[in-house]
Length: 289
Ligand code: PMP
Image 1 (cartoon, protein in one colour):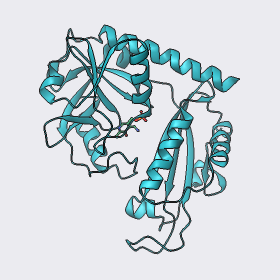
Image 2 (cartoon, protein in one colour; image 1 turned 180 degrees about the horizontal axis):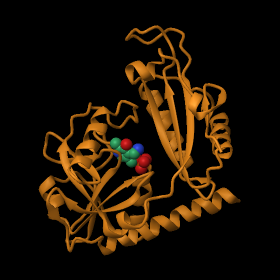
Image 3 (tube, protein in one colour; image 1 turned 90 degrees about the horizontal axis):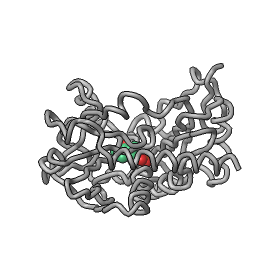
Image 4 (cartoon, protein in one colour; image 1 turned 135 degrees about the horizontal axis):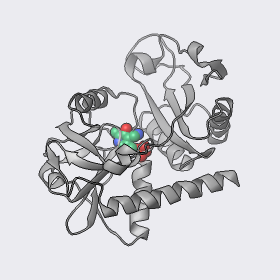
């Protein structure tokens, strides 16, 4: 079966799905995106993702390409045409096509691209054994709360991690504290069983998975603390993990050359993993009703 992409009003075979050379997303990274997980044919946390899309667009003064109802129809149609029951939906909105000029174009219409692909959530070794992360300098701009397609620092950080034999990079701000992963939020658990992650600010993306895990931790009566933490503190944590739509909750068992705890995913991380799996199943059931 060939893949189908939605591009500005048309459903096209993936290999022919292209945008104009003067699309401002292509020339200026003048656009935003979202990635939404599909589990059992249902979209996980669709509303928070679409709320964040609206927020990113508003921050950049890009008009939404259409109303939410129409957008939801397209997301489902792309899912259906690609027969995706477990995977990811990617959607990107750029400011549109216009002769190249830094200033906002007077008349460009926002451009929308939606793709879907099969992808099982990470399983097996990564979840059971945990992954390693390396720390790198955070060289991004000062509006990391906007889910902009301008991801070059994140791309470089991820590649640095892979080159060092790690799964991801945790970026470190000028104050020596960890901001977030290249495409995920960073969490640690201390000896005192505090579950710590950085509060939302312009320095990080407020992850939708992060918010779900926060709610689950609170419901479970865990000691949830929102504050920034240093690299040294992270290295002395007993457990750590990262969260994102595509990785869900992934245990982190090594930071640079330091092994955390006994080097295996810890009990609280495993508990949160179980709670998150149940949470996804509830989303699946809700979508099926
Ligand atoms: N931070 C960054 C920089 C990201 O790219 C992502 C993934 N989109 C996240 C955090 C996690 O966000 P979410 O849980 O909404 O996928």
